[in-house]
Image (cartoon, rainbow, N blue to C red; front, side, top):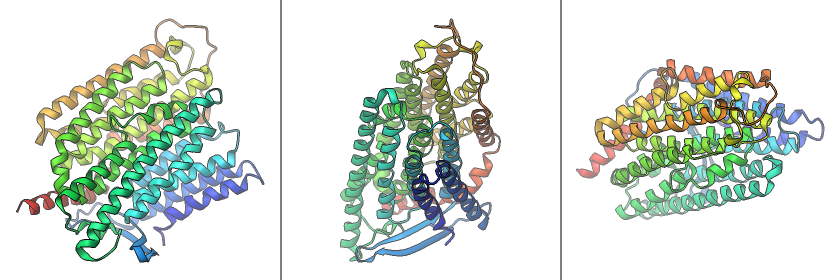
Length: 505
């Protein structure tokens, strides 16, 4: 029952937010905040129920808590949710960062507040559902349910002066999302029907599909379908076209939720599904995945350097870091997989913080164009220093989680792919170019015009301070995350290698 609350609480709080607005305009935001906090408390309770610091070498999957309720029994579909160390880390992180996103919107959303928090909590429900689904149809359901509310968040609460661009960005996001969902649906059906032909059992149960023997050509086809679907959501070049436009047009809270939380469902899915369900084809696909990862790293860095719009630069920075995460996932190294998890969390924090700070700059300057800024260090308190810190964190300064994540990924890659490791390290160096270039254009040089002195409000200050402490915590004490997720990561890697070895023999 406790596990089901992870879905029930945010889902019903979304409807409470929607219908309570007519009684009091402040109830929706408090209802949404309470829903996220209760979800966080439930996830912490689930974390404390099991001792994740006892290393268990068991066969995958080894769920720590699972709930199965019949749903569409005729087609083998059930409401099957489960958690392990990996998913519980992602749920707690998603709850914390969604709280930050909600705090960003606290005084910013002035229109249709009930509908805003309704959509926000539906997106949050979909994200949590994607992390705990143990039925492929249920996973697809949550994967798709995020699309429509996110569409409304982009269209209705973006820059009011650029409504036409907001519609274009939202349409692009929806089209890319629908393509991703359709590819995933087709791939899941092909996998399920193949299992039915072999066993005469119609099921979408992840645990059963793991044990199914799949025809070599069908496995390649389904694996490519899963990969394309997840690569669109990450996004990976050349499937990245939707992210920069959506990021520019989204409000700060929407940008934090998209880049900080929503995008991380894709690398999580690659870890959970591609490595386990399709080990043989995944092994053959490694060179292509590595190539796409390197292309994303260098392309994202180079294009970020050429940007004038600060939010577009942050979006391309995220694409560049997703390339490193993709390389780490396909490195066949347990150390790299631990680094992938740390990097996913750290990159989300640093990128989300830059989104928040860019939103604060836009609110005061009414522009996102860096060419119209310059010399702002003398006019703004706190923001320049915070921006410099998170820019340095983004390129992996020691003491932050980004440094630990990049170090573990590169260490793991070097064991098996030393040349790829050298190229990836070069790609990370390029991130310093666009990061420092952004700082130079915004805060140094001569001022383009005279600005009044700006001060951060207490709420804005505390949001950034919390993000700083979270990022430093990951940098100073990453062992907490590694210990909690160790059994899951170890068993995923062991199952992947065992499946490959079994096929070769």
